[in-house]
Image (cartoon, rainbow over all chains, first blue to last red; front, side, top):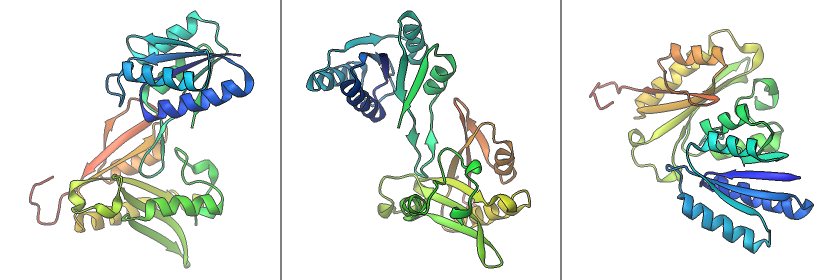
Length: 122
Length: 148
């Protein structure tokens, strides 16, 4: 399966990438990793790129690593439309102090606009 | 009470189902939280809570310096009877008495009965960029010192 994972630079992004790597190793998917431009994120785009590169190298996965500029939601959906991906993977929300799952505006945009199946990682 | 909770009334993943998961969840929100319950014939039928929005609840020094997340749960057969409104009025009144000033919550955007309830007790929408509507209220202390 051709899988694209979109990462914004939060701790959630790291968890999403780790799970996707595990899945890729288990089933032999073709993986593309897109690093989004999200200035408010904990990690800058460069930091996220470096960290993703490290995690992929450690896992010995030969994935394509790309940087997407501009609004993260629409950049990711555009990129998905241009490729032939079977699945788009993104983080599946953060937990509030109460334990409520909260999905951000990027997640909502991607869910509503993605041309392909979207997987939310918890 | 949460064992009786109708899973279709769950919001944003809470309350969880199954006694063990319910106990785990209540334990994580119990520390330093402020709670009000309603009973009918002795059995708990509704619960409203304020959970401190901090990493270490034990280290809270001044309640007015932090934000508190609110949630309320009313068992399905006791809904639409004004219990939620009364519970929230008591919870927010008590919160104000113990020095809490800033309270926020999120609610699923399509959950109109809940949004109406929150508006009734004074919450105002603060942002709606995604599936959840965020709302907040500033409580004024009894002495009305205007710090809010």
